[in-house]
Length: 215
Image 1: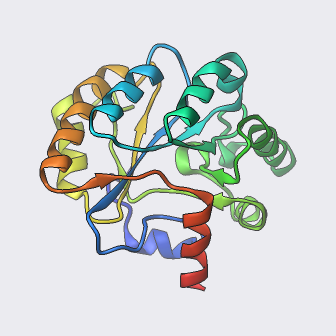
Image 2: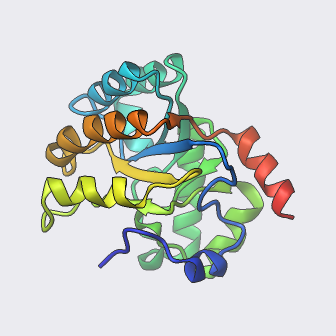
């Protein structure tokens, strides 16, 4: 089970994590987890380029090792890169030493202080370490593109019904999500563009500024 819109009470449990960006401007932050892979990520870049949209890609280190040229393309196109561990580990199911070593290995692979835990699952003890060393980026909208039990129309509705200024939206540039993503991403870009939104990438600098404001 997962929640499409992250409730405030969950956000307050981990106040040092980034759930959305504080802004009154019509800006949204599209994020993509689990890549880069040649079957999906280049197509995502093409769709984003149509609207001059910048996004943030939380990359699995092992995929970066296999497809480093795609990571370079992402950077050349002005997108931000984050760490999604080296082997897509579930923090709840992994002992702390193994998990945190894997996080560090992923960070070295992508050269970024931005981090998103796979499945959004970390233990409080892991979160304490992560907050000291990384900018942990969660989300306030989960598209559900990975879910085989919902339609592509429902996936699109999950996004456009819940998006607000400053929203951080999760998609996946993965084979599992490919079919839904090919339907949902172009329509999301078109709809939000028509509504006057622009699409920006998260950066270590912008997240550091947010942390100072909320301190």
